[in-house]
Image 1 (tube, rainbow, N blue to C red):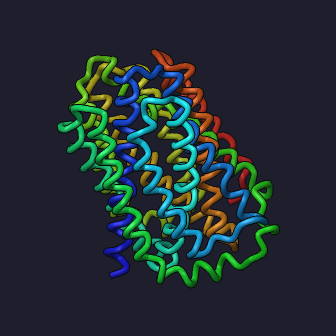
Image 2 (cartoon, rainbow, N blue to C red):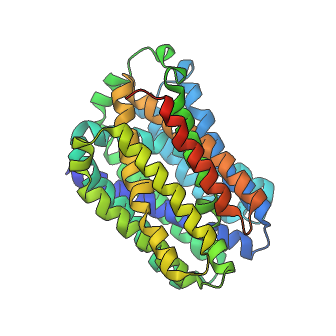
Amino acid sequence: MLFFKLSAFYFFYFAAVGVYIIFLPKVLHDIGYSTTQIGTIFALAPLMRFATPFLFLKHIRLDQKLFKFILVFSVLSSSLFYVTIDNLYLFMLNNAVLGVCLSILLPYVEIIALNKLGKRGYGKTRLFGSIGFMLIALILANFLTTPKVALHYYLITTFLTAVFSYSLLKYDIECQNNSSENEENFSILKYWPFWLSLFLMQVGFGGFYNFFTIYETSNGLSLEITSYLWTFGVVCEIFMLYSQGNILSKINLLNIIKFSIFITALRWLLLFFFPTNLTITFISQSIHAFSFGLYHSAIIMYLYTLYKNKQLAQQFMFGFAYGLGGFVGALIAGWVYGKYLFLYSSIITMLSFFSLYKMKK
């Protein structure tokens, strides 16, 4: 039953992510938002993901009561999209609140999955998130006739995410015990090259997460074909998540992380040099198996070995990497959007690769 609940959580959580990063930028662009405004809006949620974990160092303790509160606010924030989307500042505030919720929700469940399922089982349940992301990419591309259609899908998937999150609360006793370590002992400076690499990797992803759909449709591809590109990347990711158990068990995690970063830099170069070549664009999307599938699993497992307070470590990973890195990446992508977008992404990703050479195995 635990496997089913975790799988359902990942399915609906990443289906909601799919609506948010694939279609919402396009919706905002179509109703008149500039690329700079879009970049700013999508930078706010990651920024809040970065800021929120610092509250847990001394001021707040993440327990079931707070987690339930976060579930309610995530659904409420999704509902308010309907009334705030036409107002830039209200929509920005709404995204900021959503960012706080997301900074707590996913790390909380990730630790439950790792504690209960281990290296080999984690990928097999996490792949259902990729399936949810893939299906939403295929389905919504055919039904996105008005902005409100995307908002309907986002609200439904967020609500179901909250439902299955709530059902997992009874499995988090061990996680609460792990988090009893004195949070004041937690430090990211001890492993600063690793944290710098996390940050730069997600800065490099800013162009892809926020502007890939706009970039490809501007270069002549239809929205339907672009949704197929997203889907193909996720199919490759699913294959990796299913089969990565032996790789993660037999190969040094730091070496896996380095390889995943290097091939991601190559991926962005392919998009820069061949934006209109459909075959090469599909090849670049196949690298998502390493850029996200293998990389993400190796990162959270590597963090699991570095820190005793594993829940807080995961919160900081999502906050520092996907939060601060996503915030800076979204801003930069909005500022430099154009022909050289993915060249900048490749350069930043290579800086992430080189920073790991100061990290001891």
